[in-house]
Image 1: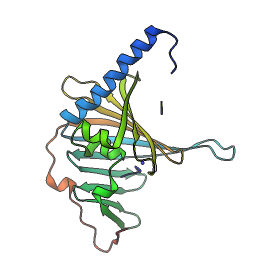
Image 2: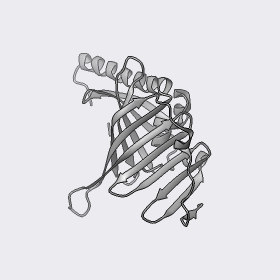
Image 3: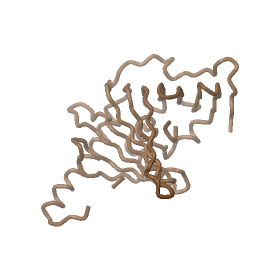
Image 4: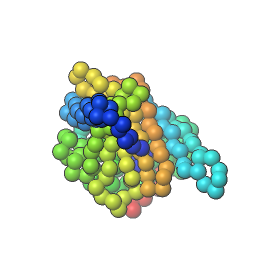
Length: 220
């Protein structure tokens, strides 16, 4: 699951520096294009979470998958389907986390739970200026056919170290392709999006959540 709702070349010559600098400029441009041009979205995703090596053992990775929908500003929904069912819903006021197996719901005020989080980067912020209030944004060199932006939270007290976002260039609005999240424990989450739809009309019920009957509701 996402950690709410949790990397980065010296240049050998001036020519290389200039070419990579142009790539970096494209990354920020893609981010701005995405924020401005994508008012709602829907996609499938596969998330791989890799923990750092411990005691000489190889890093451990676990994979989950599901679907993602959002609508600016401040509304999104992650439905994790495999291997365990979980739902994360931001309805504009509250952030809901439902663990189906435990039949447990955790709810927080959305204004306190988002801020410098990956969700704010891709779904919540209404414009680039709002993002720059919480993140230091830098373009990164193109890689794997994508244009990249790195984002470092200005709040150093959180659990998030850095975020990298990869976009597919598009004539209308850049398409979100990959999200990489490095947390304070050295754990890396990589989310790859597919079957993306840009600006679909989403029902209001998409971002509504009602705790199931009998569920334990926790309000930290």
